[in-house]
Every structure is written in C-alpha cells, then in structure tokens.
Length: 559
Image 1 (tube, rainbow, N blue to C red):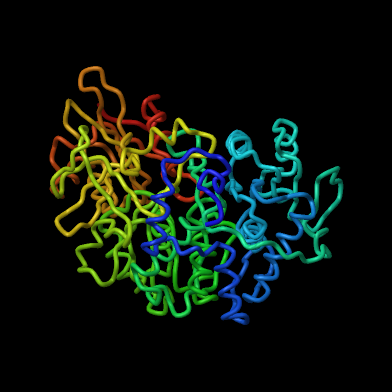
Image 2: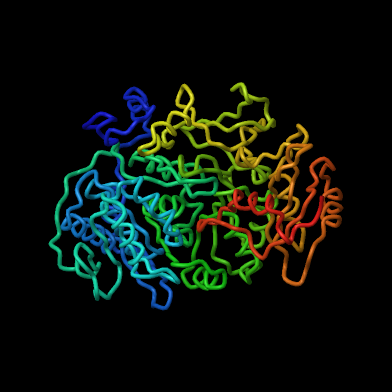
C-alpha cells in the first residue's frame, strides 16, 4: 500500500484502521490484486477463450475473446482519459447489459477512477440522487432504452449537478450531440495509453443500495474488498462447481451490485464466459441458456422462479450446473425442487451491497443446508444478537452482524450513516434478522423492518412466505405488516396467483394450518396482485407493499 487509508479513500470517513488493513493483508485476505489486474491476468493466460457474449435486443450476438476484452478495456480507459477523467474522478454508467459496460468497468479502474452503476430502469429521481452523491464527472448512457430518453435525462442531470461535466452516449448515431456530449463510436481512433499501476487499497467502486428500504447510500469498496468476495465464493463452493470452464448467464443488471461483482468480476476471476442479456425474459433466457450451453447463474429467487415455469424445468439436457440464489429471502423448499427440476446445484446464499455474498450453501455440506443460507466464508464472521447486543442461542432469531475483509469501508460522503452502521470491533449492522443453528448455518429471516410484531409476538415472515410459496397455485408470495390500533401490527399476505386461479383468506389460512403453521402467525388480510413490485435485480420492494396494504388496496380482503 502506497498511501494511508484516508488518502486511498479520498479523505472519506471509515472505521477501518491502518492496523485492521495490515491484519487483512497479513492473513492473505487482501492480496493486493486490483480489479483491472484480474482481467489482465486472465487475458494473459487464456487470450483466445471467449470472454463475453452480448445478446442485445434486436441484434446478433457480439463475441469477444479475452485478448479483445483486455484491449477494449484499455480503449475505454484511453477514451475517458481523453475527455479529462483522472485518478479519483467518478464515472457513472447507466447502460443495459451490453458488452461495452464490461469494458467500461475495467477501463474506469485502469485509470484509477471510481466506478458507480445506475440500473438502466431507474427513474430521474433515483439517478439524480446517485449522480449527485457520487459527484460523478461523467455519465455514460444509451441514447434511449425502452420508453426512456436517456440522453434527455442525462442533459437534465448535467444542468442540475455541477460536478457532471461530460455525457457519453453508447450509440452508433452521433447526431445532435452538443458540447461535452460524446458518441462512444467517436473514441475508436483514440490513441492507446499506458496508465500507472493502481493500489488495491484505493476506493474503486461506489455500490448504491437498491432502494428497497428508502434513499440509496453509496457503499465504498476497494479492489481488495471486491476481489476478496469473488475469490471467497470460488473457494467456498469450489470453482469447478460452476462449470469447467464456467459459462454464466448474466441477467441481473450490471448497474446493480449482483451483476457487477458476480456477473462481471467473478466470471473473469474464473476465466469464464459472461453471456449478457440486455433484458430479462424467461423464454428468451431459456433459449440463450441452451444455445450458449450456460452452466452458471446468479440472481434473486424471482429469476429462478421464472425459470421453473419454463420448459427448461424437467429438461434432461439442461446444461446448468450451479445457480447461486441470493438477494432476498429464498423460499426454503425452492432450492431442492429447482435442483431436481434443472439437474443443477442450487446454492442459497446471503449477501448485500455492503459485503457482496458472505455466506452460501456448498455441495460438500449435507442436503439439510439447502433449507438455510449456508455457512460463512473463510476470513469472515457473523453474529446474531438481541436488543442488548448479546449473542443469542443457536436457532434463536435476532439482529445479524457481520465483519470481514469484504465488508464495506463506509458510506460515501455520509459519515453519519457510517458511524450508525458500525459497532465496536468493526461489526457491521446489516439491518437483517437471522438465526444461526448448531452447524453454524445462517438462516435469513428478513429485514429488521420486515418484522411483524402482533400483540407483542414476532411473526416469522420468511417461514410463512415459504409455506405460501409451496401452494401449487401461488406464483409469488410476500408477507408484510400493517398498522393496527389494538395490536400494533397485523399481517397481510400479498400473492400472485397462477393464471385462472384465485384465493380467499379462509382458504389460505386453512392451507397454512394444514401445513403446520401456528394460528398465531396466520395473515389477517390478503391482497392479490398481478405482480409484486421489485427492483431491477429482482428484490421484492416490501416498503411499497407496506404502503399499498396500509392504503386499503381494493384487492384486499380480511380483517
């Protein structure tokens, strides 16, 4: 490390001390490898292996070898440097899953700039908050995507945010671009540049939380924290579990943490092939899985549930070998059912933007682990505590704390949020509730705000949701609380039903009781929706469901 933590983090506040950093390095958890060096190393070893396949709506697939990918990343770095991007500047990328996105991520890091992603589906309010908080100098967008004019959106942001100096448009058409607005194709002939080696302890990525619980915050990650997480999962499951070589379908948006760390960085670390889809459609996804012989997939349970409704389920020729399911609560019977239907190992896992994935099931553990969120990576630790901060007994639900080499160093430009999130000893308050059993396996119970306390009794939301999901006519299920003057809160089940079926509250409660659910945990209201509100990465936005239920939705029955 060539500088102090304060210098490497651009003066940002962090509870991590120089002694902490030295301890992570001495133990080998921080190996001094930069994000960019991971690509360079793989390109040197496997120059002719296919690195990227881009399935772009309305176009033929684009294919790049690792040699071509490495050159494209340097071209991206050279292009951004040509318009004034320097070490420490922030570049925000708001693109679909196009191959240019991957080149930009590594190019930004080659310069020593800071990357931040904005899911292309985000609206102006969310995009404005991220660009302003990140103090982005450059915003990269498509000219338009679906129903959004992204160039117009970027121009409005540039008018409002003083740090935003340049707009880069990834489009073949340079028509009507004004001053400091650049077409990506105009950089084709920019001379290649050589950049100085980066320090792995530098701030390289701001991962903004997905907004399932409110305004997003920018989680500060360095090369060290990101590479630790990617290598940690590979070591935990065994790299060949994902295929040899791995061919990964990247359907989670790269603008989100899942798509970046697991779709891009993890694939390169394993010298695999990233098959990128610029929109998620289950039917198209199955077609791509078969055509590209996809072996691996990362995503929220929503994606897996979609796959289970396609003809891929039960197909003896399904090429999938491993699916890592994380991002929100996993229905407890889903992994075993999906493993049987797809002929692939389905690994429930737990993580968040602030730590990537930190626990996962593995094939080396007994099958019972699949009803949990797995064991913790080497080098990291988890605790479950009560309101007084005391560790609870095995199997008891409490607040989940974590610490380790992959944990965020703090929130960008938010020292208040940083201090609120860390306890002494670098224990990070996740905001999740969980339990740890006698095997050391973690079971996520939901966000702390998801807890429903009815008349002083906690309702185990994830347990109820898992049983609901097993109903043959239920496609999606969520349980949220709504205010009650007498009991404080009551529970509401929100369901998406299979086409042609319906459900009433009495039938639902009878089903839950028949499947062993305590009557004290039964929902007292039922709402039927055509779909659950989710983030682009597939997480159910429970804060929106709570708002909907509290407003007496017309499809609500019960009480």
